[in-house]
Image (cartoon, rainbow, N blue to C red; front, side, top):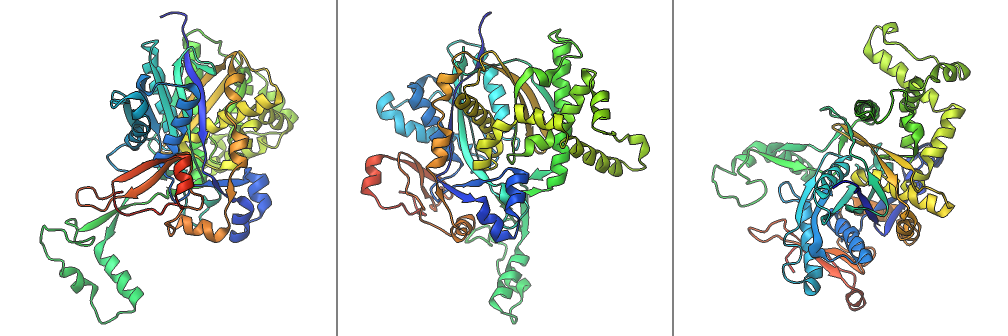
Length: 523
C-alpha cells in the first residue's frame, strides 16, 4: 500500500451554549481580572446546560461530521471516544453516543445502522483523545476503505472556590480519520513518556456510614440519638432497602471534580513532554530521517499543545526552547545575550531546592525577547479559541489545532506542505509528541469550522445561575435544546437504576415543546 497517507480529513466542534465570563468569577472570588485574563489568557468558560453531558456533546460533534460530509453511518467502522468524564464505571460512554446516532439515522439507513461499528472509551486524563487518534490511525492504515471517527468530550469541572475553578470548560471535538485526508496527514513516529504519578486524579472514595449518620444528626441538631446505635439497626440482612442498607460496610463515591496539585502537575507536564520530545527525536534519528542537530521545533510551523488554560503553552515550552537551542549550537550565545545562568544539580544539597531554582530559571527564559517572538509565531493562534472555552481536557489539544487553523485561514496564511508539531499531555502521567503535515485542501475544510460563529452565539451566565448549575440544583435547562441531542431521563427503575436515555430534539419539537424538565423515570 505504498503511496498512501492517513490522517484527519475533517473536524467538528461542539461547545455548550452557556458560558461564564471570567470577569464574573474573578469578581466573585476576589481575584484580579487582569491576573486571570492577561496572566492565564482566560476570557470565558464554557458551562454545560442541564440537558448536556459527555455523551450528548460527543454525539452532537459526530452528527456535524456525518452531516457536513454526507457520510453513510454504515460505512463508519469505529467511533473511539477519548474522555475522562465517563458516565459509568463499566458501560462505555461511547455506547450512549452510538445509540443516539443509531436512533437518529436508522430510519434513513436501516434498522442495522451502525450495528457493526466498533466503539470504546479511552481514558488517560487529557491525553486519552490522542490515544484514541493513534489507535484509529493504525486501524485505518490497514485498509483504504476504512474510515473511523475519533471524538473527545469532557466537562472540566472543579470544586467551587478551588484554584482550578477559573480554568473550567466543556465541549466535544470529532475528527474524521481516513486515507488521503484533505486536512492533514499524520506520520508514524510518536514519542511517548509515561510514569505513574498523582498530580491530578479522580479517585473512588470510601465513605464511612457512621460518619454520614453523625453528620445528619449534627445537621438536625439531634444530640439524644447515638449514631452508632442507629447504624446497628441496619442489621446483617442481605436484602438492600436503601442507600445506607448497602451490603458493603462503606459506601463508594466518585466525584466529577478532581484531586489535584497544580504546581506538581506543571512539573510533571514539563518532565513528560521533555522526555517524549527526546523519544520522538531519537526515533527520527535512529530511522535516518533527521540528523542529530536537526531543529525540530524550528521546522514545525505551529506548535499544538494541550492547553489546560490558554496561556499554558507559552508558560510550559521554555525548556523545549532551550533544548533546541542547545541541539543546534545556539544556546551559549543566547544565554550570554540574555544573562541566563542555568542551575546545576551539583550546586544544590537537595533535589527539591534544585527543582525550585530550575523552575524559576525556566520562567526567566519566558521573559526574553527571543522566546516571546518564538511563542508569538508558534503558539499564539491556539490561545484565541482556548481563551473563550476554557479547559476541555481530552479536547484541549484538538481545540488548539482547530483554533490555530481557523486563525491562519482568516489571516490568509499559506500552510500547505507545512508541518505542525503536537505536544500532548495527560495527568497520571503521559505525554505523546508527533507531527502532521497540512494538506493542499486545508482551507476548504477549515472554512466550515465556524468556531467564532459558534462562540458568538452563546449566552452568558450570571453567578447565581452558574453556581446553581454547578451544584446540580437545577432541573430545567437555561436554553431549550434545538437540533441537538439532549438528556431526556435517568431511570430509577429496578434493574435499570442510573440508565441514561437521550433524544434528538428537532426544530419542530422545539417549537411545540416547553423547555424540557429532566425526569427521573424512563420516558
